[in-house]
Structures are given as structure tokens and as C-alpha cells.
Amino acid sequence: MSIVDNQKIIDIITNANDKFIQVEDSEEETFLLYCNLSNYNSADDVIKRQDQKQQELDLELQASKLSQEEKKLFSNGQYTQNDEELSANLTVVQNATTLTKKGVTGTVIWEASVFMSNWLLTYKWWFYGKSCIELGSGTGVVGMTFAKLIESQHKKSASSTPSTKETGFIVCTDQEEILSNLNKNLQANFSKSKLKEDHETPALISTSEFPWELASKIASRDTKLFPFVSYFPEGPDTIIVSDCIYNEHISPVLVGAVKALSQLRSKHLPPTLTFFSQELRWHSVHQQFLSQLLDQGFECYRFNLEDDSNNAGKFHFSPATQLYVAWLKQE
Image (cartoon, rainbow, N blue to C red; front, side):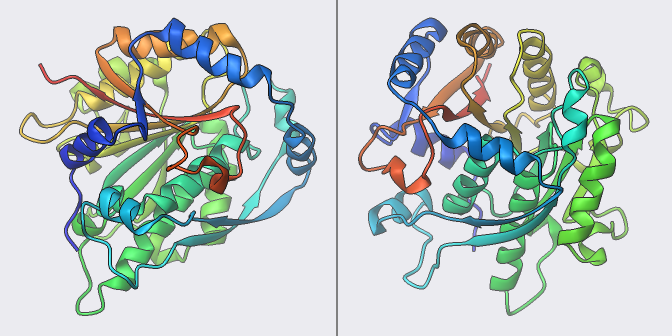
């Protein structure tokens, strides 16, 4: 199976009628989203609080069913009649006690991470064979789903064992104090062979500390500061960010980190694609995030949950959860 390269994905996004909506004005975009949200009264908040109190959860993640036409579009014509919907079963350890610490939110599962996980499984063709880094991995739900998706690609290659370069990998990053719980979850869901480097070849899934405030120094490729940078000699294909925007201080630092990583991309390759899933909380914070993206030179598109052909209901999520795709404009 050939990889759907990032330029093909960009072409699909920009030409897929109303499946993706370009964000050109942060104020207008935020106004529209919050108008829709004002008519929605979610009971999911109760579910989330109860779930976050459980020390261990078993998650059943499932791709949504796409029409044959959608499969043809999003796979760039590579799907087959026997191409089944992917699923992933994860055991996730949480630690709700850390929520009392200021700025620490990454040890419990949030709604947006489940949404993004199901979305990745649904649009799997965009992620096969890709090198990926996740920012703010938290419990690792999204990163582990990405790795399970890559594992499914391994199983399809029956004739030979493909190389990691062909089949992709992910590095899950977060603050140092989050990594212990994150590593527990990786060890609970993957064999040791999947977590181990092989002669400088990245593991299928690994973890690393990544202080966003130091991201401006990443161009130096200092492996002492950024141990993971050697895995991306031509920059990452994909960046994943799930529900990391929750106050006005984070947006500039996060967008700066995404930009710094995107600028590692070799000029002869299509740009790095960043996928954001975000739960809408505060109007001003969301608008600031989008404004930062646009001001820093990113093209930005929102997955249209209101498009009937996208059938948002199949994801079973409220309009409070949104998904964006962004990439740096080519100079």
C-alpha cells in the first residue's frame, strides 16, 4: 500500500466541497461555533467527571462507517472492498488526584481525545506510514490509537516485514511529571518489542519530555534538549494535539511549538500536517488560539460536523468538540 502523502491530503481537504471549512477569520469562526453551542445542553459532562474518577478504564474505540464514495475520496483511491473499519481496545490508567495541581490535566481522559481517536481510525489512510509527534499526550489515548493504527498496517503486509520508515511511528510527549503514568499505559497496551528502539530505528511508540517554552531552540537539533529530534531528520509528517488549549497563556506557547516542529520539515517535502481536536470551553481562549495559528502563517481548516455527508452523528459527539487541520503556508 502506497502512502497518501501530505500534499494529496491537502488537495483533498481544500477541494472536498463542504467536508472541511477554511478558517480565515478567528472572530467569525468562534462566533459561529459558540452560536451552535448555545443551543446544546450536554449531559456528557456528568459522564466525563465520573469516568475521570476511575483509576483504570477500558476504552473501546471504533472507526465510523464511511460510504464507498467517502472511502475512495479519503484513501486517494486505495481502499478495497475488504477494507474493514478499524477498532482499538485500550486499558488506560488515570490519576484524578493530580487535577488539583495547577496546570496539570494530563492524567485523566478527556472527551476530545476519544473523539480524535475515533477520527484517526476512520480516516486511517492519512496516517499509514507517517512519522508523528504528539504534543500534550496525557494518558496517551490518542498516541496509542495512532500506534494501533500503524500496527494494523503491519498486519496487512503479509508478504514481508515492512520497515518502520514505511509503516510509521509516533513519539508521545508531555511534561516530565506526566511521563510516568503515560509510560505505564504504553506498557499495558504494547509488547516490549513495540516499545524498543532497534539500531537507532524508532520504536513504534515512545515517550519524551518536550518543554514547549524551549521550542524555539529546536532548529539546533540538540538531542540533549530534545531527545526525539533525531527521529525526524526531515521533520515530522504529522503532529497531533488533543485538547491542550484551556487558558489564554497556553495558545502562544503551543502554536510556537507546532510552528518550530513544522519548520524542521525538509523543503522538498509537502508540509507537516497538524491535527487539533479541541473541546470548546471559553470563547476568548478559542478565538485567541485560532488567531495565533493564522498570525503565525498557518492555513487552517475545520472538519465540518454539520455536513450531512460527513454524518457527524456517527462520531456520537457534541458540537462542543471540534477538529482542525493546519499547515504552514509555503514561502
